[in-house]
Length: 366
Image (cartoon, rainbow, N blue to C red; front, side, top):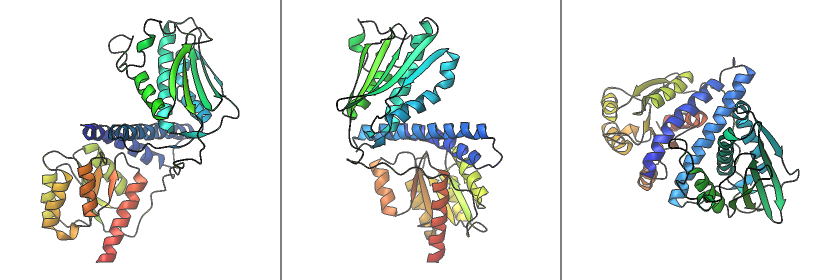
């Protein structure tokens, strides 16, 4: 079930990320439009990481950790919520410790917690006297880093305080909240060997405190390498003649890949059914196939086995797309073929590099 949920989430994320990256390749974009799209790209990347984190949490796999600047995280969240704060006429004040040390953590998970807390505060301030006031601060306390989010709203009634971190507990009306935000925050902080707790705010409303231990950035998992910028779309030696079959039951993903590879100069054929793709394989010669793995009626493994039976030369010419790489059966099959696979949501640069590499390897092998 978990891998199925990931598949359903990663497919639309792949389309959003992909088209944003394609648009960012255009030279005629205005400065503000480009800046806005870069924010969309950043948030879609964060959403993708959250799905990955959920899968890792469910499978109890090692967590991702890197050096985190919590002041920068607070600034980023404030910028993301800037328009909503202005619309709600809420005054936001940041009070950030000037020498706050970096510590180990997962920046996307902590950002998720901060976004949830700001959302809760905004909803609470709807009933507060105007102007609403929101104060986010960072501080050091012994060997701990604290992030405080407080507002001048109505606060949390004492009778519900014992339950606020329980899953699905909410005081909001039906349809206004899931009751999972604080429960998820509690789990994330516990996973970081920290905690989240409530205290009355100096502003008169609610105050939630995130508390994390200071861990040297040189300890444990090293910071991950920054994401490389998407390179300009350029021709490769194989683009003049390569014929590529794109198989994905999600029409939008097939069209995205077709557009991207078409811009690179490749000739593409789009197909949304594995059975139809097998018929095409029998009638035509393809230099490469990019195939989704999870499909109805016939999955990627079955398609691969039948395709290479019909055309053995395709054995090393099939690239798989998958939205549930944590699935053990999927992993075992991919390893047995030795063929590359690309996880959804993908970077278009990775697709470009993988396609070029496979074409080059097979050209050399001929």
